[in-house]
Amino acid sequence: MTDHFIDGGPWIRRFHPEPGAAIRLVCFPHAGGAASFFFPVSRDMSPEVEVLSVQYPGRQDRRADPNIPDMEKMADQVAEALTPFTDRPFALFGHSMGATLAYEVTRRLRASNRHAMALFVSGRRAPHRVIDDGLHLLPNDMLVDDVMALEGTGGHILDNPELRDMLLAAIRSDYRAAETYRYVPGPPLRCPIHALTGLSDPRVAAGELHHWGEHTEGAFDIQVFSGGHFYLTENQPAVIQVIAERLSRATTSR
Image 1 (cartoon, helix red, strand yellow):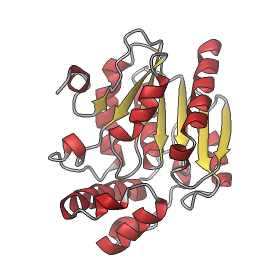
Image 2: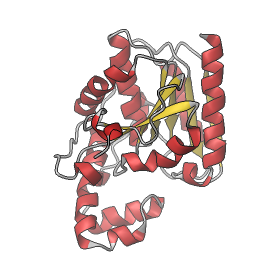
Image 3: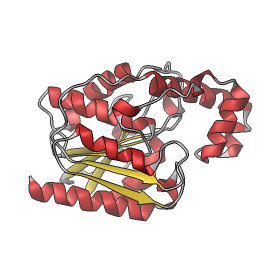
C-alpha cells in the first residue's frame, strides 16, 4: 500500500498527491460509492488542486470494516480524519448522500475554527428538506432495481454474487444513514454554497436546490446540467470547470 493511502488513514485517499497545490478539494461519494469514483476528478484537477476522496467503510480496501448506518457518527469520524489536511485552503464536494455528509463535516470543522472556502453539494435535498423514502428497508431485489434505475453502478458488479452482497450491504447502510438523518438547526455557514444537479434527476427536482441557500451567509448559486442522478459522469469536464471557477473566485475573495 502506497504512502498516499497510509497518510490519510482509513478515511482519506490521495490518488495524486500535490504538495505544491494551493487548494485541497475533499470529495464525498454517493451511497454505495467509493473513493475511486473521484479518481478522474483528482487526475484532471491536478496539479492546481489536490483532491482528497473519502473512503467509507464496508467497500473496496475497507470491505472488512463495518458499515456505519449513521450520518452523525460518520461526520464525526471524517471531520477528525480531515483535521490534519486543513493546513491549507480547502473546499468540500459531496454527491447525493455525500452532500449531506460534506455539509455536516463542514459544520464540525467550523466548530473547531477550521473554515472551508466553499461547499459544493450535488444531487441532494437541503439538510432540512431530507425525506425518508424507506429505501433502506427494501428487499434485495427491489434495492437492486433502484440502484440500476439510477445508472450509478455497472450491472456486471451486481451480477457477481460476492460483490453484489458486499455492495448491497454498503448501499443499504448508506441509504439508512441518509434517510434517517435529521437536521439539527444551527448557525448558517459563512462559506459559499454551490449546488449542482442533473435536470432529469429522479431523486431531487432542480427547484429543491434553492433551499440550500438557507444554510449559508455567503454566496449561493445553482448549476443544472443535462442528465440524471449521475449527471456528473457524463458532464465531467463541465463540472470540473464549474468547480475550478468557483474555487478561483473564492481564492480571489479571501
